[in-house]
Image 1 (tube, rainbow, N blue to C red):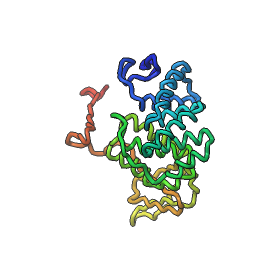
Image 2 (tube, helix red, strand yellow):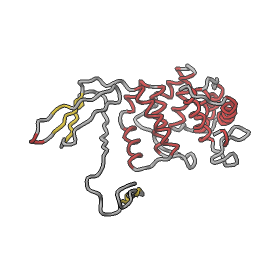
Image 3 (cartoon, rainbow, N blue to C red):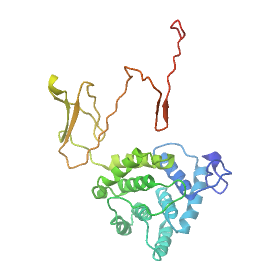
Image 4 (cartoon, rainbow, N blue to C red):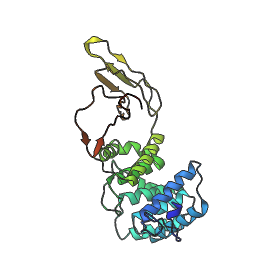
Length: 287
C-alpha cells in the first residue's frame, strides 16, 4: 500500500501512477484503522497522509464518500463535528441515502452526540435499499456488508430490527457469486462485528439429532462453542435434524472432506472451476 501511495496521500489503484478513487482511499484507511486497533504496526507517516486525503473528502460533504471519510476520521479520534454539520446543511437540499445515514449515525455515536445519532439510528430497517453506484467497486453486497457492520458495531440494540433479511441477502450474493475482493473483505468485517455483538446461544435450546434410518437408533450430536458451534457427524447418518427452540435465528453449514472412492471418467469443469489430476509416479511405482 505504501508503494501505491501518492504524495497527496491518496492510494493508486495499481501503482502510485494509477487513478485514485475516494471510496478505495476510505476503505484503505478503514483497513489500517482495524489493523491498528488489533495491535498491528501501521506506519504513522503513511497513515497520516492518507487521513489528510480523507479530510478533503469529508470537507466536500456531498455524498457517500464524504460520510465514509467522516466515519473513518472519527474512528481515529479526530473531531469531525464541523464536517457533519456541513453535511447536515447540504442534506437539507436533498434526501439522504441509506449508507450516508448509517455512517453519520455511527460518527455521531462515536462523538457521544447521542441525540443526533438517534435521529439517524431510528431509520434503521430490515435491509438497505441500493439506490446508487459508487464506481466500479460497488455492488449490493457492499451495501449489505457495510450496513450490518455499522449496525452491529455501534447499534447492537437494533440487531433485532434488521432480523434475518440482511443476512439472507448477504448469503444470496455469495451464492450468486456477486462479489469482489472489496465487498468480500467488508463482508468479513461485517460478520466478525455481527458475531461479536450477537448474544451467545444457550446450550439446550436447540438440538442436533443424527438419523440413521431403520438400521440404527437416532442419537443427539454433541456440539461445542459459544456463538460459533461445531461438531462432527458420522458418515452413515442419513439425515441431520436441527430443532431450534431459541428466539434467535440459527444458521448452519455442512462441510465435508475426503477423497472420491471412484475416480470420475470424464473431465470435471463446472462454473469455471476445472479439476485436473496427474500421476507423479513412474512406471515402477516410485516417485
